[in-house]
Image (cartoon, rainbow, N blue to C red; front, side, top):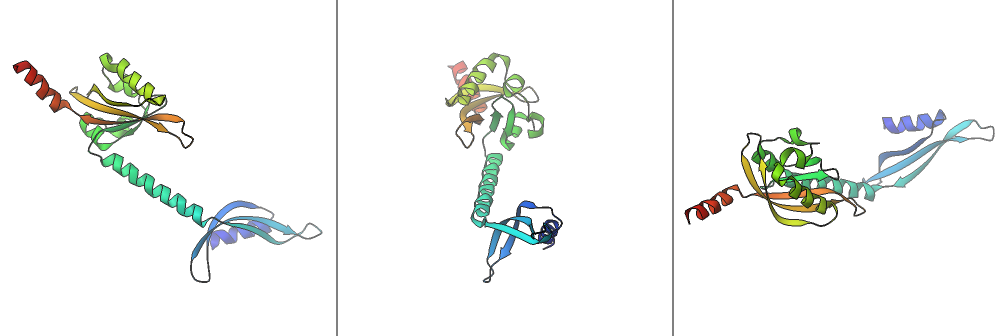
Length: 199
């Protein structure tokens, strides 16, 4: 009530308000979201004598926004808690996604890696060119599945990762980054190497 009163009082003081959102309640108690434009109403002598309010029912739009937010939060929770390392980079190669499993495997927290160049900072020199090519291809829309490369943890331990690199797009379909979903295959590689050594 207070904020609506302020909008109307402002209009009476010759200060128009555009795109003010507030709820109205119908006779049967249903909530309707309204987008209001309030402008001063003037008489023939240009004196302010009231307020003209133009409203638009934006209930459906608000419901869609709420649902989008809910789905986005659900997807973020899924990424954060997935039992696979998931990272994201923007179109410049800077890390903008780093889930809990990636942090657990590497020892690098989300706060430590955000904004860092993934290839330059966290990929060993011998694999940088290959990993960069995979990520650059994904930025061009050419996705890669089952690419193996090593990461090194904050303690220097080698972790072998099997990576799927998927293009991340904006609402127009333009590539804006890459999402990498990995699998820690370190133990499997060690078993394979031991079998080869023994054979």
